[in-house]
Image 1 (cartoon, rainbow, N blue to C red):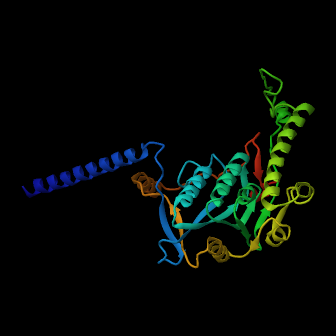
Image 2: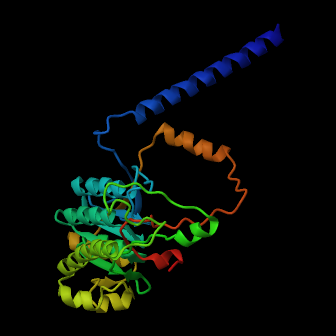
Image 3: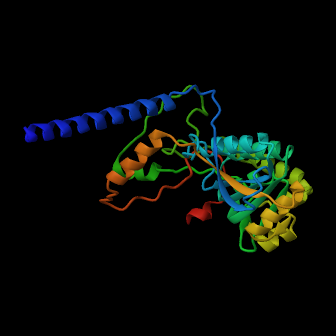
Length: 330
């Protein structure tokens, strides 16, 4: 009898556990299927400063890695949307008096960099935005940065790299060696532009260079406007793709000051006209789906049977504001 009672207890516990698991999965599905128009409610995490100043806050936002609309974000589907969501939250929170954007990026996609610049500039019209450049804020990272109210770097920061890059590969000779021929059917002479199986025509080269020049002129005009520089002087000197360390960047007017993160925090308080503030950052709201992902990461061993190939971040035929040497190439 006791044996039967024990089996029944175990069975009951298993049923309850299974029921709880089903409920958690159901809640997770409901959370993921919220209306896309519903705003994402971000949670705050204390980082530093005066904890008692709950009504006077400085928001810290990070911009790290390759700037792309394809890279997965922390809060949303990509880096750009992450920045937009956080900047909007800080912009609309009346308790947030100023914002620090800490950048550590070699740049990235042209359009992605421009969208982030636009969002930062939009925010600085509402409250001060101090840009703090960490190890690197180059090319698209610098493009995004110039939207800020005040730009600060460290002595050892790498910045600048004002320019545009596009790459493609030519495999015609390799294909001839292995006896492969490509057949291309197209509706117009430019339809297979950057086709890697044939040489580019002079007309195609001129067309691509025109795209590069147009995108470059956009970059230079933004820097000239934001940094109050003569555009021709900029083109003939600083904007040839070269990089600058912190001291040279300051001397050439690319940034406003040098210091460490605490200096950026103090500058943000000064511009925000507050003697003290709580420094916060945004974190994703808790979701059961995140909990499941955490469990799955713990349960599935991270086994690599072969070395992983290096992933070159540039896609053929795409325009980038990027410092390629950051990836150990070129």
